[in-house]
Image 1 (tube, rainbow, N blue to C red):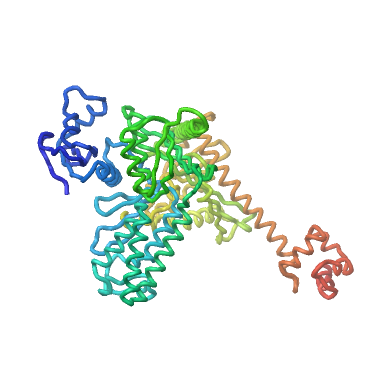
Image 2: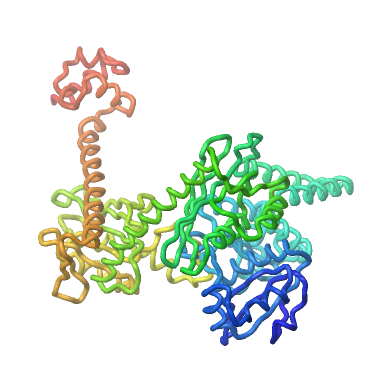
Length: 597
């Protein structure tokens, strides 16, 4: 519970965190201090230490504080509250909806859910860069500790019957015992594996001593499962080269941070993040803020962290990371040798990513400007139909994320609409795709399951002119999705058509925005044609061999391998066919008669 004060003189001389609010009672800054009174007083000096403080204090209205037992506790609480409230003037990992959070809900019997929305209640862990991994982890923890998944506790459900839930709705577990399991999940996400394992082992021994063998067996399984997770994700390395290298590259209102992970002398991964910053933020403060937020969740803490320059609270952060890891962690600023080269390599990576993002931003900004969009089209989906006279028709969907192909989101749809009917097929293609989007948006925002980055379009592009665009827009109207911008890009004159307008938009030929839209359209066409050709090739092969009795996959491969093509098989004599592996005399005669009735 925080305490509100009117003046800095009312603050205690103890460690803790201070919370600054504006006139609307909105949190604008959270900071930590070894001595709350002395630290906060510095904000009220006539001469401010930096321009950012001047801007911050121009919005300041009231102050609250929370006392902690030590400066280290203040550091942890500060990182957690920044993550939760995301104040405007704190340096923080950018919440651009790319990464999901795990959330323990604020209920009598809490649930564990995944979300991209940071609310005012509940406990949040993340963000997590690997969506699949965190999905698996959350699924494991739910089944491991039998946490309820239902939104309303209205009686025992199927999960309780198959032993996946302790059924608090039916009174099968007390609130205290349930919350003990929740506290273990909290320890898990904090990375305190040794503590959770010790707690479970103590409980198992006690249950065994009390001859509660069924309970002891459940605890044993929980211990084994957690050991498996640790072995998979956080291997302890004996080699000294257990390092993370952190480097930054500053851009306007944001900083690119690159983390390179080295284990056993090998670079095993590289992640890049965006920190929301201002021009007044110093690079040492940015690195310090990143370390506190990055390692404050379920991540492996290495023996050594290499950074570009000295940071505030270096010793304090080292102590905190040592507590998480369980043995000494060092933060180094290398001056020469291999370590310095690694830091420079990470910095070069950060610069490259910054330049790529700036170039991507240019093309996206141009698209936004010419199409008069409300926001940058970070996710552009392109659609096309491929067929010959309506036969073997496929619809293709491609997706570009931040101006680059996002092949995880590519899809092929086999068309059911009889052809030739390009408009009907486009309508079917968009219906099958947009129906899923409509189902997602019809859910309450707080209940939506986090999606992979790039799952929802900011702009839809149809390969075609006014006709194709018209039927596509009808589908948007049907599902109340007209807030998603949609365009048609006709190849003949490279004109862009928008709904309810007969006048096309023309973007200059050498414009980066037009080039991006052309790449999306051409990729949708290429992707669709490639799969259409595969279907044609498969159909030709199927019609020639698959109708022959006795010819399965292995015999088909043997025939093609030995004779080379369908034409050669057709022209082969019975004797030639009978010499092929897996083909006997009777089958050779059957094949010959099939092609020579």
